[in-house]
Length: 260
Image 1 (cartoon, rainbow, N blue to C red):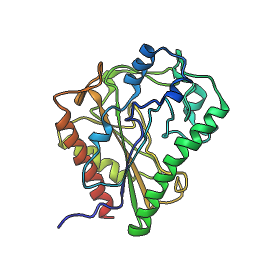
Image 2: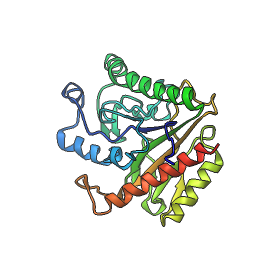
Image 3: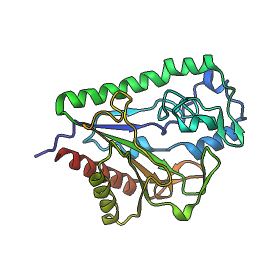
Image 4: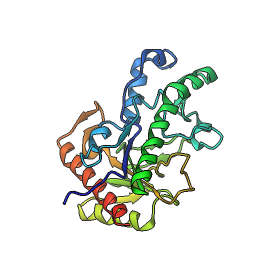
């Protein structure tokens, strides 16, 4: 009997490289420098890694995170990365490369045209799942660079510390049993997992954030060395195997929530 995974919402915020001309004009780096940063920070192909057909409800950001990072909090006062110039509207591409001026009118436009519509869609998808199933699992699909990572606060993360799969969890929306189930399954599949390393957390719409236990959330981050050439952003030989592994992780997480 086919399982009903209609309570699952797949979220992919950082896979796009699309930078519309009107936003490109607000960015200061030349094309070579900008594209270098795009290669470094885009979760390339994650819209395909996490496209398991059992999970048709998908919310995918339409533009590059350099235009709008939909994963950030709307309010810069509670967004940790905002003080480093990487809130929902980046002013820094890295600690050493300015991306754009801090223009409030531009930020308002980005909120109106990109950020708010994206979160309205995500919230509506969660609401629909709750109405029908009285539960919702958000699977947040990401990847991370296999090389040394420079974080917004100028801290370095080193490759020897990196897993094959980073399992991002939230203390409220990710049960410890779900976390341990997924980590054990990653090992069973022959890969190395870590929790919240090199990045952590899992997205939940603000309407339900830390106030509704029916909403579960987990982030899967795939090490890019498993599936792509990080220099030119092309698929590597291991792409399809990695994609099927991601699909398996999605199903395992969904099965956990299905049986609650």
